[in-house]
Length: 594
Image (cartoon, rainbow, N blue to C red):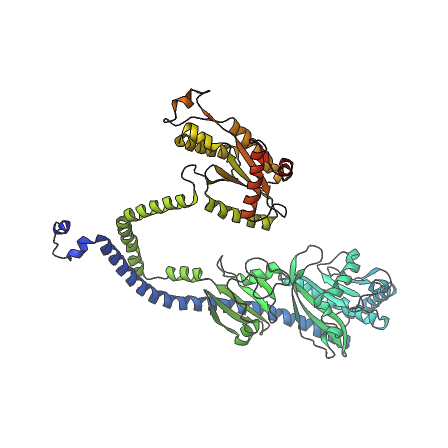
């Protein structure tokens, strides 16, 4: 070609680079991208492993902290249990927690008198035993209140012994609350129907508390009928249930007391969900969520947000981990699992009773990798916008042309070029969408068919150009009279349809009448080539009317578009047969006409 001969001949570039500049830009951009990808993949791969190791190390530290805290709690409960067992066996003095006067005979007599007074009131609905200043009292309920509670049984022969032990244990429970802010409640529950609880509860709530104790797993699961024939003195962890009174979500660590093989009661500590979150959230980023889980897959707590009662693995965990059983996390003790885009990190805690885990999203790994990226790679990436701008500058003109052409084709495919209304194809698509909404939300859906009366006469008298003006004017008025959610469409010729989402048959008839009246009052200016004889008649404008058939989607008029259009069209022609310029919404008018 002649234009190729006019191109310059550069010394340092091949001639093809001048002939095809778009290719040059694309090649340059591709080369830089390839180099960047190779370097970036190598760098990110190395950084990814370092980031995962860092997260695993952080998780191990949190697991160590959680394990240490709860190991301490287990030791405290075990000490209190051992103290109670030793007290029952007579190896501990009656008033272990009292001051130097504990061996004084006068105090012993006074304490025995209090024991006897409480024993004498044992059949009252509620009764108490004082345990000394600043200590919570022993609160008990009568045998009548214990009736029907499977977890409690009043035995008078052991009641005095339980009272002495509860009074001696109360100062120790109080000391545990006052020295450790982790505890929400600390309590001792005796099977004889008495208890000590810190912080102290209202005495009037005693019957309700005992009834609640009877249903709570931290007490019921330690009873002989639940724990089995062999007494198991290991602490039990009960996760996520609602606290009595304020509805706060808490967890409880409890331990049973067995004396000579007989179950005598339970010592328990309540831990608020917020306290567990504080332990898990130490050193976490705002977008990191660390979970605490038991061996059976129950979620105990999370560093971000509360864990609902009964929530189990893998609920609300990002990624799909349904094929990964919780037992594997406990068997492996610690490690990482990659499944899909997410990486799961886990670490055992508290002697294997719990496991801490978190699912690391690819975005977090990517952000961490970028933050640790080498300056050379960052500098290369800074060149990419410049190359991208060059590429876009060259190809923008071509893309703009095809984009505009595509938009025009899209408009032609969905809208009528004369009226600007939806065509039949787009109307069907919108009908399908509204039908889904109707079925999902049980909302009504109506449809109307509209036809211009004697439109052929308009074309014959005023010409086809004026007929097009009538169609365009009618489309404009339809958009003005109908709601914004209504969908008017031109199906062909002078036939129009309107989709009315959320409208009942009665509301659709009202809308149709408003449209019919508005059309009757419309005057359209004829086209310049309209015959002079037609212009000389009347006011020189085109007046016309419409007939309308209305249906509502349902069992009576149908649910598919073809059936609705057929029924609406039948009523439309009933309107024409009845004299035109009217709306028909039922088949009664057709029967009358027949």
